[in-house]
Image (cartoon, rainbow, N blue to C red):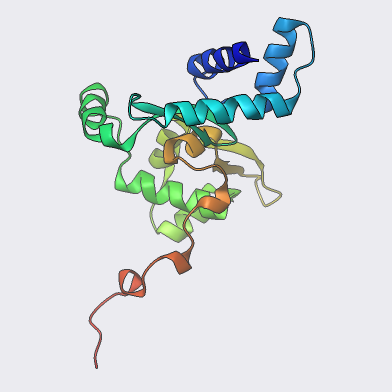
Length: 186
């Protein structure tokens, strides 16, 4: 099924989000008016991944956020960084990164809980994270006033290149000296 490789390649290339096997299967089954076994899709995806690992391509097919997406290889990071710098001045501020990390680790979380942890008002940061689609409203709390609950979005997974929230670094992953405040006395 050599043609299957080309169709998967086209689907992944045209998708703005990581494309999962089930979504590929649905599209291709509808197109060919026949059920496509998931095993055939997996084999085709693996063959494409091997094909794009060669040095003749500037990108590779990677599994990310529960699907597959074409990503630029690390060797081309500096040229891409320059392009992105010119195209976008939409970097996350320190306040936004702090707010986002609290949401990622404590989700679902209310704005007042975020403010309690940060010690400052976070209305602006939460609003900007919502605008950038890195954070989503996950419902309402059962607490007084039924405040909104915030959590990370699928775009958060893509932005940070992770498949699952369990891929986030844990406190044990950090060296102790990075987490200490002040001077140590012997």
